[in-house]
Image 1 (cartoon, rainbow, N blue to C red):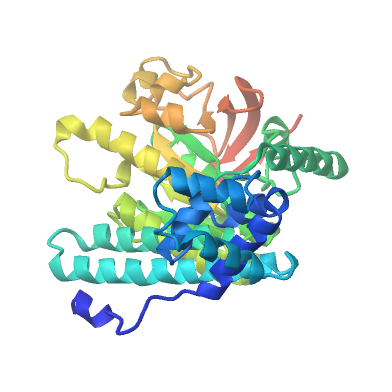
Image 2 (cartoon, one colour):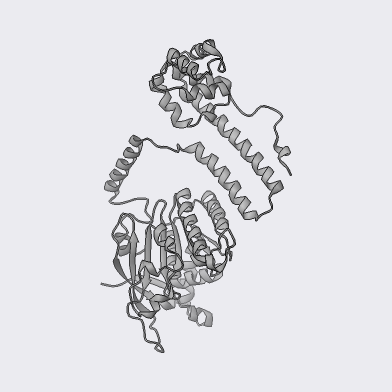
Length: 446
């Protein structure tokens, strides 16, 4: 396949009449019409005709036929756009400005179609000459299409008035609903109260702990609550455990039947009933798991976009950060920079998808030198970028660990340390109990 396969034997999509209609309306009533046109037609290239590009770029809210003619004359382009006769004809083509929104929509649609043709042609050329990794090319293709899609729906620059109005609307909604109605519940009431802005929007949320301190359990408990109890679509990238293991943990958690009991086959009729009941609920829940190991950050971004588009997922969890591969091969000495690049990519992905991304991360070994010490942000392993990029950082830890050689109890009193929260309280502690047998966290009884 090469770019010639996408070459058109006719002119690119455009409508000269609609472009003339937009320009005619602006000339008729510049103060009322120019702002509306600029809101959607942000660049001169939205117009196909080069004459119209020059005219549009030369207009302002005080433009009339005489001032526009003088502006073009000063730029030595008046003859290039067709002279005074052509400018005068633009006003004659629109009896009123009533149809301006329709003219704008037509011009904008044709512009997007031209961008789509150009993007497809460029990608076809790149496919035929590309010698690198396929996932890098796929990410570039998806980014190109998503950029066009964003142009279709949004304006890159929002007016200050519109931004203020949106903020006031949000404040009013908070008052009506006693909080952010779009925020996702973690399933832990006291933690939800501390996270006053909640798990919502484009947030990067980090759960960080040493191995076997319950970060996967805590993350999965949250995702299970959202999917099973709240019927919210969730997406999970499990780079460490396969989906069968995750599902077994979920069944144990929800049925309160321990894994050792299940694996031994020593199950009562009540156990079987509970397992059957929770399995039905899990099966019906909108939980989507990708357990492919060794994914690169570009592959995760691509698959996350598809999850959002196909299933409408409201939150994504990645387990865990240090198992994600960077898009470029780096030496061991550059691992810190690689983790930094991955962290930045996850943050930008959350903004792009407009959903929170929950990422699990390991803490470094320094914390093990002081048993029971509360974790610090500086304990985040391999990169300070995680600390910088994250909007919320949660750190589960055991303040009273058992001595070496002693058996750990099935119910372990633990704490979740809210180490960071943009726009909300931090350095807060939430008491929980870790039920090791059932791989489940519960709120501590007061």
